[in-house]
Image (cartoon, rainbow, N blue to C red; front, side):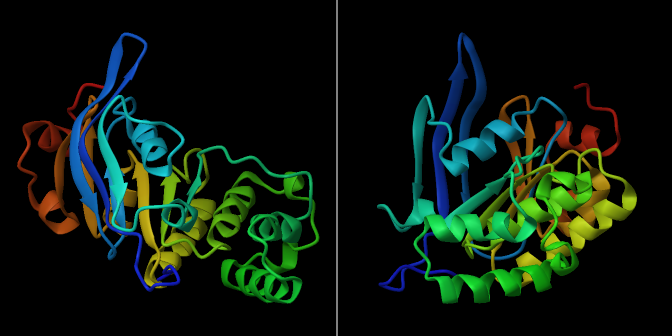
Length: 243
């Protein structure tokens, strides 16, 4: 786990009565939950539930209309110890290796330390053979793997992933899921948004179930799939939930 110089972790990340209004529409309503270090958390819900908006609030791209979002370790360090990968990541007009190195340069990492970290990330993500390729010439699955590798290069304490396997074929999906599992096993907290029940079953240790902007469940994956408490969550598992 990444820690600040005083040894204080940034997590947990706490939402207290958080709402988000866009225009005249309230998109997220009275969210109360806490993200703690530990097993991978899946943010599950149908399309339009508000999953991407919730991730953007976590990442700091959006500010809540009401309520509080705060880290255990407040101040300037906590936001720098988290990263997010979007469903359609943007590749820099550079090589694979340069894409991975870029966030390390922004953080002022020395050239020697940077070279060591980039080499490790290339090896751990299986991108070594593609290191000198132009990032924008990669397949969709390879680009998503690179986007995750680039985010992971800064050794974040928490990594937010927004439907990282949407529109990928089964082989690419399997490779991405393997990489996400490895990152989580290495001690990085992962919050993964998806509406794919199979993916949630394969990866999740904890489930946050979001529907129509409300958080209806926060429970272990086993308890959720054995039988969630909320009727909408049960309908979602049966494939009967209106979107």
